[in-house]
Image (cartoon, rainbow, N blue to C red):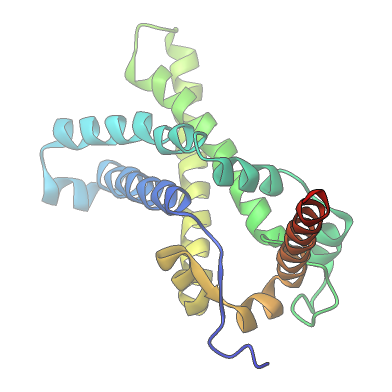
Length: 222
């Protein structure tokens, strides 16, 4: 049977909500940071204190969607996958032919795992250094100066990561559809994440086998 038009469930509603909420907060942080640090735009927008306050509130709120997402079993399972690098992942990163079907790519490829780790680490650093910058009485001036330096460079790096993420998302409409609707076509999934599709098929077959075995057991008891 042809798999044209067949779709697979990729992300739950909770996972999509976490992604969208984080994206909005991240975008707010980056845009307000640009306004605060780029003089011509800062003068054009004005209201520096208000922009700074929005930046701080969005920054502190940034981890909230991810923490709330821990209430979802599917989200926790995806975090476990993102936090685990396999031998195929390291080979995928080193290879120039990453999409030739020779790698057992699971639900997330190595680039997505690396991006998630860098973004999460950057968020921790930015919230920590931002706290030292905003609450000026916590530490002495030398520490605040160092925190400002680290904060600025990590913010720049995070901005570049986000731009790269958007670039790959724009180039892959199917991936965007998966995050928007929660479903992807089987043809795309088998090409980009074959090991994930194979795992889904095994789970379904095991489920059918278990249900069949239970049914036969009940029939014998009768």
